[in-house]
Amino acid sequence: MAEVYAGLDVSDKMTHVCVVDGSGKIVWAGACATDPEVIARTLKARAPGLARVVLETGPLSAFLYHGLYERGAPVICVCARHAKGVLSVRMNKSDPHDAEGLAQMARTGWFKAVRIKDEATHMVRARLKIREQLIDARQALAGQLRGLLKLFGLRLGKVTTSNKRRERLVALFAQKPELEPIMTPLIESLEAIETQIAGSSRQLAAQAAADPVTARLMTAPGVGPITALVFKTSIEDPGRFARSEDAGAFAGLAPRRNQSGEPMLRSALYEAANSLLGRLKRPCALRTWGKRLAETKGAKRARVAVARKLAILLHRLWLSETVFRWA
Image 1 (spheres, rainbow, N blue to C red):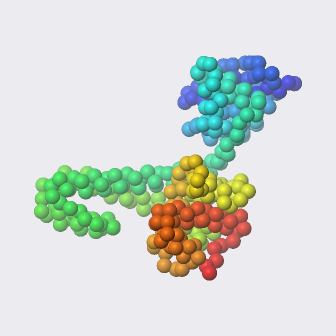
Image 2 (image 1 turned 45 degrees about the vertical axis):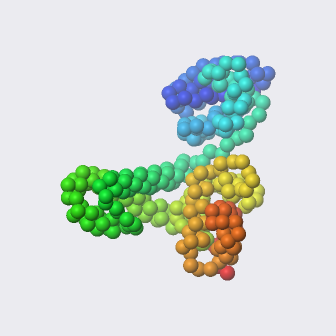
Image 3 (image 1 turned 180 degrees about the vertical axis):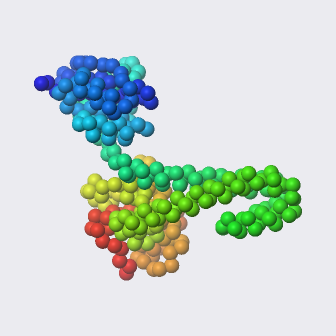
């Protein structure tokens, strides 16, 4: 049986499918529901001898990839940015034509496969992202509260805990009692979000402590449960990098390189570096090196450099299955 190749152009409800033979001639083209079971049945019926099926990265790519893989389809996910360069040169830009372009990519092999994280990893990352969104919402509400109080000449000042903020608000509302019922919905929303953040942080800390990999990563200076979980779920398999230095580049922390990297990982490593250089009291070689760098290059560049070193260190701890040893 001659080998055929398929391309999937995925949208929210419908997926356009194109099947081509080894010469590039279209064998079948059509559409079906965006569901792995339906797509798998369509491919089985329309593409006997299927050698490869390609789809782009997108919101549904992980769901479809795992669903098709479990059903025995030889599925490969490719970077949407790379695929765009190929598809943009085609004469007509439409979903059926994009499916044909992806099928031709599957046939020629002119693509770079993207690693798709497993479902358990996505579960943890969903928790991390929700916590991140809650923190952003807290900052927005706190800023709004400060701004509204200033309209009436009231300054909240520096408050580091919810209890201190509550005490300060009691004092401010004593000056303008009519503001309290107006501000109460905002204050209660802020406190509710802080409760959710605290609960989320406790759950993630317990999960990190129970996992042997993240527990080892947390022995490194400045690395807490959030950074450890972000590092593990971003990389997933330490063997994917030939060198530990590549972990820093993956996070977008490589100097003189034009790439954005993994935003969540980059942010977590930067915060860990900030903690190491600012709050850590126990001396270590990395902190000493970072402090010297800050004196000559500036604090921001030093934090980026220390974050890159942390990525390398964490990757080596993961591969060697050892804990950090303080000098």
